[in-house]
Image 1 (tube, rainbow, N blue to C red):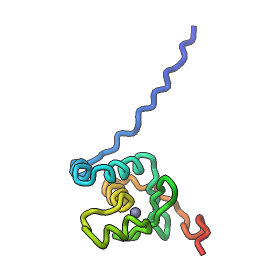
Image 2 (cartoon, rainbow, N blue to C red):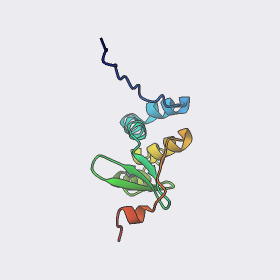
Image 3 (cartoon, rainbow, N blue to C red):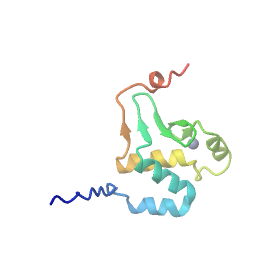
Image 4 (cartoon, helix red, strand yellow):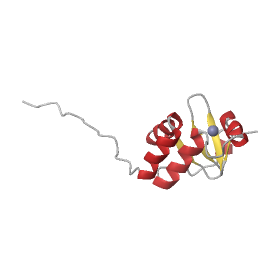
Length: 112
Ligand SMILES: [Zn+2]
């Protein structure tokens, strides 16, 4: 009598370095959002841009600059408090978790 296979797919154990925990402590919710985005492959590297897919929109991250509003706010105040998109990219780069797409974001998104 065949038994239904229990299809248990444990999430991939991301090698999250201790520094990420530190980062979580420092950044709270933003750190959590960043980790979540990475785990869901929402940090994407295109040929031209690095993009973080948020809940309502996608944001382009270039170096220390993000296209979201939070970033502007952050830049004016404490540079240590980055928006979670910047955090996500930073963590993804360190942990090698960037979802790489061999295409141009400008073409994907039809940026004018
Ligand atoms: Zn941002």
